[in-house]
Length: 184
Image (cartoon, rainbow, N blue to C red; front, side, top):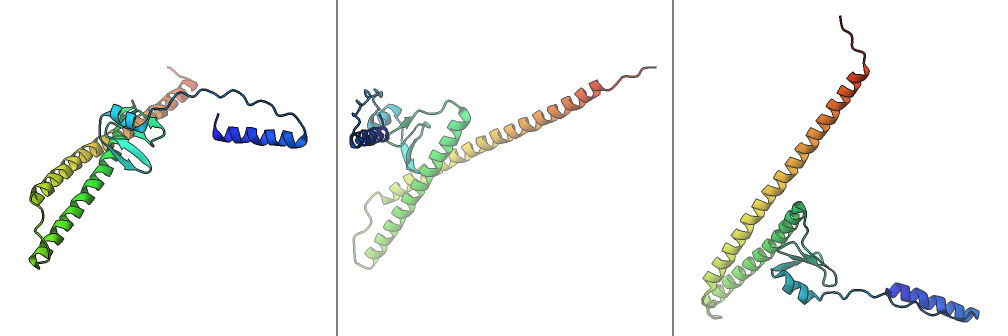
């Protein structure tokens, strides 16, 4: 029983008590299946996730808001759209991290040049190169997904166009069937 249903039942009981009617017993609770914990869901998915628009979007297309979990869609088009969204959010986060780290390293080097701090930590260049490579890989995949989405959209539009053409042709043929045929 939901919280709202429980509240409504309690208000009804209070009204009956005030009006002098005997309160009725609450119906037995409806057994809800136990919900999988978010951590269990994450573990079961076995892939990375990003957070966007108050939900966690997994690399495999699964989604969760920590209370309700959704498996990856079986529809390839929907799965591709979720993959695009995952890549878009992941790419934005990586780019933000790269720019932030690059700015911090630059600032630290300037302070060191003024004698006001140490050099950036060893490995900073490799760190930025690794982030850059990761950004490029995600960007390349995002471009490939966009191409597939556009190709699918173009295919759907062509299919709709052809269906419209067939419908128009059938309409003309049906109208021709209604007209008399004259032969010499």
